[in-house]
Length: 96
Image (cartoon, rainbow, N blue to C red; front, side):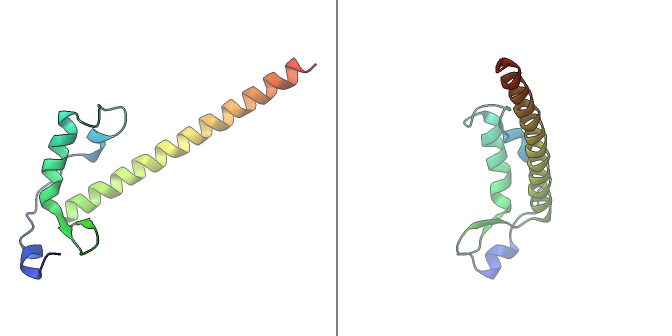
């Protein structure tokens, strides 16, 4: 757990884009992921239970990433629904 003096000394750095480490952008051990970890780690603080973002920029970046993931989930659900309809129509046609 960090004390107040350690939390106050958290550097105010602009974090790398988290989406650089998103699925489809490289393997889990890619240099982009290692670079991202090196960039955001100084902005993380230990709240006694978890590591938490300690820089406003990092919090904003996490929120952007969450919105990006939410959008992707919505798009995938739409595609899945369309595919389910296509499969159902195909089965109905095949059963004639």
